[in-house]
Length: 459
Image 1 (tube, rainbow, N blue to C red):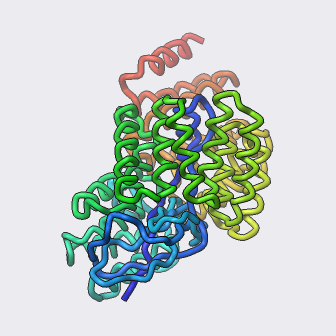
Image 2: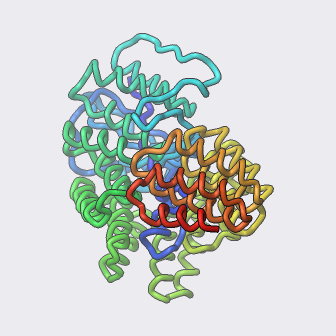
């Protein structure tokens, strides 16, 4: 029996410091949310040829890019893949597709998940491997990541040499922007199935995400190598070419090869909106603004589904085009009102535009939909700081600290520092010192925090 299977991806890191902002010169957000309309099913693992079947990729409402059938023992019908946040897909005339991620979850920094926020107790049903995969996919569709993780892990115990369950775990963590955990499972999937196109694309994507404390330049180099390997596996994969362009651009390679990669992705699938958006951003960087506007127009024209619209909105934010992104995001929320990533992005856009009350409401909804979205807590803390509601800002930072991974600690400490600065401006010396001490506790070797504490004591 074939099973719906997907892979998540977020082309933009959906964080206050998105990877575009960090690595493309303060451009804006990451997260590309790839998705579209179809869903692909997979059966028992079977070897496939190195070329993809002609099935479209799909981007789902949630920001997942659907995955193709993993090498199955019995042929599976190449249906379209879906990218989740709901379950739409990203159209690309390749057999494989990637689901980009985002979704609410209940994970902790130990890659275990708390169940306290779930509406009902988790019930793990019994069954064989295929049944577990089916149940896990359904749980992921429902944004019940704790249950999905448990089911995929059980499946790995039954078939430890089957790549699909490991790939599914990678998707679950990608949905939650838990890049380091996702990386582990995608690497395992590739180890078990070296010809797995989706796993190569997924890992390439993961390596483009900003992970503090790691050597980003080395990760971008590997992301490029993985994209090239994906092209070897499937020469007609528009998504692989788009990721190649992205990896080259993140490496600071602004040349003909980078542009050609984006254009090749468009050539392979003229209806795939993502490379139009990336090419538009690339052309803006080169100063070719008129051509860039045309590419943005084509991206918007091609982005007929919810997930793709989220993707385009994120790319627009990467260029500080917050008002334009707002229009798309409001359209998204008409069809998927609880989409945590659309809520987050719109909240961030409105924060930039000083519309703090609505931003607060949207970010609160985003957190309710995805209680473990570290970036949403930080963004809401920023909103409360701007509204001079410092107690609530501190509360949001505390909640962020409860779920922060090791690579997120620096960002957290910097937000505590910013709050301390504001308190000091308000002449609340003792509160400022207390908050600076929180920052220092997170980063004990950061001399700047110690210096601010000493200066505050002298006031």
